[in-house]
Image 1 (spheres, each protein chain N blue to C red):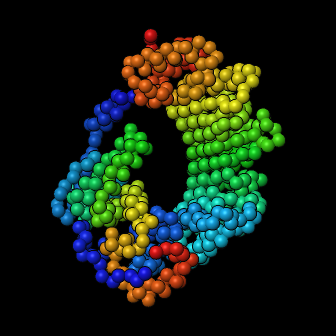
Image 2: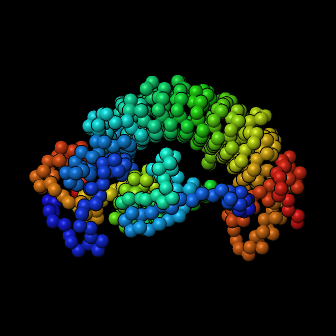
Image 3: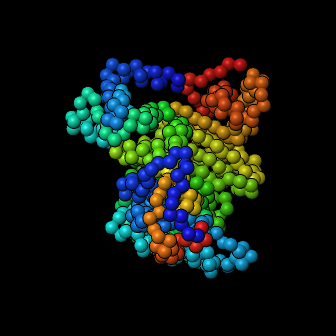
Length: 166
Length: 392
């Protein structure tokens, strides 16, 4: 069992292709195996249609976030990782402050990586859950642009969802 | 409570802009679809940006436990609905009628312990009409069996279905016919469901994963006999049969025939004496068997079960990896000398580790299950497992 990943590595070593991803925000470059990067549908489409040069520029995503995205893709490209391992690794990747999470969800959306979009959305959703609105507004910096009268009206209109809610 | 108009500026990670509200709509819909619908709807009062977002949810998750009964002394009888039940129904109905009707649904779940078959039927119909891909139903209906509507039982979009029949809510007269279904999980199906399951599985040609949890194939009239279960599917890769277990549970013979050429992963759990037809389990990769006969077993029944389990293990001889639970080993061991071998081995391993482990912990920690199987082989069990020999 233990020697199986070794064998695979050796077998695929001669034809291993890599891609270079470059963050256009701080010009950081990352060299990744092609099969890792291809989990991004956006990158896959670029490669498939021969639009990708030696270096693939990634606009609007910082190096810090791109590193997290690549970590996620590497974990999920590993065929010997068990479901439990992946869950743990995912939890580690999304254990970040809310602003990193928002960057991450935008990156997952732009690069079209379904699994990463799911886990980051879930993490953000979990932090909204069970909180009074004032706390949600404070944590996320949501500006309440309702007047008190308007907010009361919205709640009244949805009174079937607000009974007993602070 | 009056909302504050000014935000606190002393937050350590203060961000000048409202980043979350500036996310594009599809991402916000995604985030809101990841939580229960009750919470999602209430975000409409956060700010104007959030006012209508929930109406574009692509996943709906209703759970009646969020509308708990407050006064248990005034518990309703089975045939009436409590005021909390009415609130829950009203909430669900409001959401269904206000949600954007141009959008399909990707996922829908209804967990309701309130007895309201009308609501359940409306939900199932709604999910069917909006081409839901994943559906989970855990519903209670004492008044009558819910006849699942045709838009659901013949849905062409449904890929993942989880049904819990704890409350005998689901009518098993008509098998489902779901061409796109890949994962089917049925829980608490009892009172002779074999025919229903057999026909439903045969009607779902793309099924890849079948899980039957808390399964009881006996009918209420015939305690010790049950109908044969037939599992036929060219695409089935993963099969889990978990028979009921627990105190006072009976142990009966269950005949199963599997014809699934692509099957690689197989799990068999519970208090049952398994009778698998020849050729049912040809070349598996991953097998887990945890059989524990519970309740009183007559010697004759025990002998037959032993034979049945041996036959089953004999069928698994080509499997790459087989895990047997300690209970299963113990049960097998009672029949011959292999028990002593296993015990001797365990004792040796326990001394070697210098700690007190339960048999299961020990087996898990050392990954020794396969070695144990080799021990069984040495003890002249009928099964043979490749490559693992151990000399004491």
